[in-house]
Length: 134
Image (cartoon, rainbow, N blue to C red; front, side, top):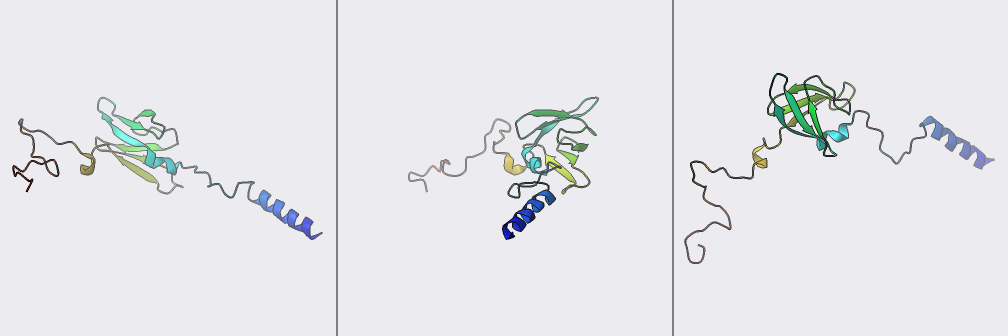
């Protein structure tokens, strides 16, 4: 009899929890987990400004202001340097902003040649003019 009571309690717990697997993460209705995988590539200016985004599956999206993206986000602001989307009022965060690729100084790895003069190399490859490197 005790085994049946335990089985009944276990089954009722499954029904009360909606038969969700407790070891799986809950569904992300706001798609907040995808935000970090999207990249803002830039903007094309014209009669209607168009932003260019790349999602986590490397697909390209052309978006305009107040347009909705596939996860349900709405583009609220867009300029040359950044794009902001409204994720949703019930989501955390409610807004997300992407910086255009290559706008951070740490992302710039190439050196700029100005007036035909290359900057002096720094580090191990720098030539010092000394016989033993000194």
